[in-house]
Length: 88
Image (cartoon, rainbow, N blue to C red; front, side, top):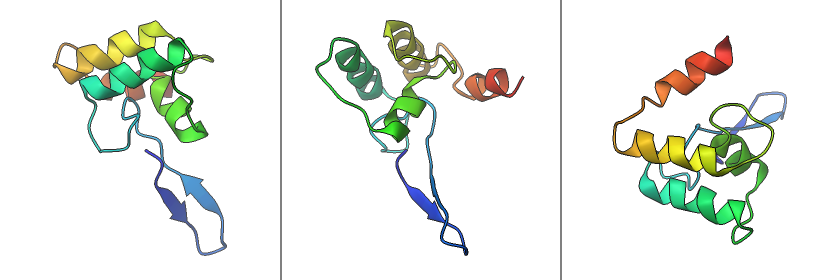
């Protein structure tokens, strides 16, 4: 999350990986913690982090997102399913 892809025409695309808030390439408990902190205004997110946190495509980051990320981090939920649900 947060990496930039620059196209030949100079267009920049920022990559957001659902559930990976800190950009380390994994959906982990630390990502759920960041989302919880965001919900009580102890963290601010850039646009890429905000998109990554909204794993269900909702409009606002909330504790339900932290729960889903936490469940995925311990293999109780499949993060790949988030993409499938958003594609519908």
